[in-house]
Image (cartoon, rainbow, N blue to C red; front, side, top):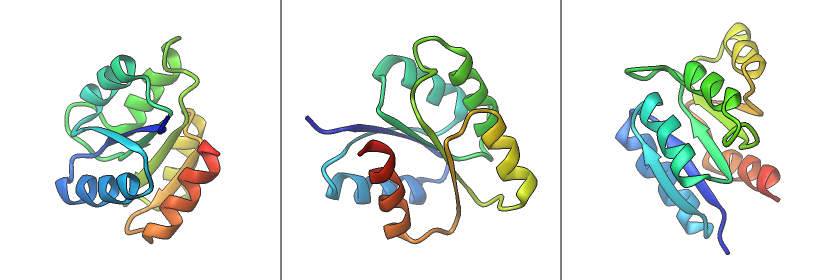
Length: 121
């Protein structure tokens, strides 16, 4: 059975590229284009991993991650931030809120796949 990954990002190009990479590596992919929809989809779909952008409309990725970690049904799902915000403070804030890893955009596709595979075994 393939592992399911939820991509939460408001940039269609990023979603398309990450979806392609994951599907090429036999992952099932679902996606949302803003944080609130991402939280709802995570509750509905129970993915094995969430790739979360930070800067998005409605609620940002940090707030979405906080909500996911407070929810009993989504607390255990690993969240990896994918963000253009690369400052040390940005990374620290996301990790404090419960993100397992942080990848700065633009990223190398192989780096993303290596980290996803490491987390999902």
